[in-house]
Length: 170
Image (cartoon, rainbow, N blue to C red; front, side):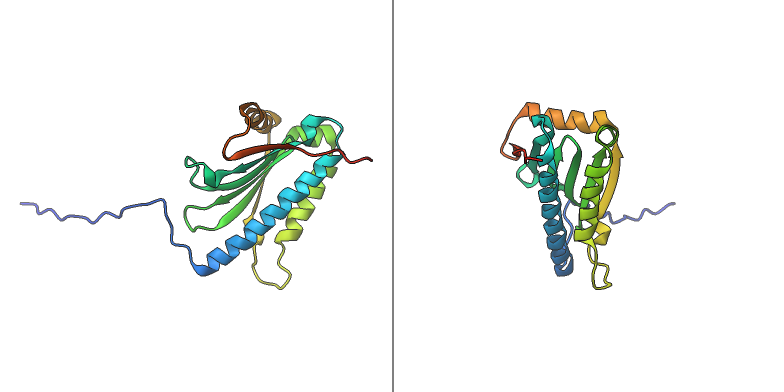
């Protein structure tokens, strides 16, 4: 006769315990994200066309459907997303670069943004710092543009704000 033993099953939750160290690191990553979004905004001022100077800020924490996304900056050229890993509670910054922008406008805009992103996440004291946090992706134009146009067409909500920066004279 076989005996049955009951196995204990672990209950998985969407919450992860965040240590004080992780919380402090997340604050640094969020500060870097904010600086990156400000730099991205400033890069848009040189364009003549409103479409190229338009961007969205998305505050995902105000949207109950998004559990891992925190904040997002979205424009015609790139998407910068601050998200939290459900595994360890650490913040990460995903930078999605549009392929068409590179082909149409060259690499100068993208290079300026990336140089700055690496600068604000660089460790200057030989510690690991927040260098781990950046993830770069190249997206086909239609994927990035469809997301951008959909956000613009849906308009502002409780968690999406749309802006057009003023053009700076050359």
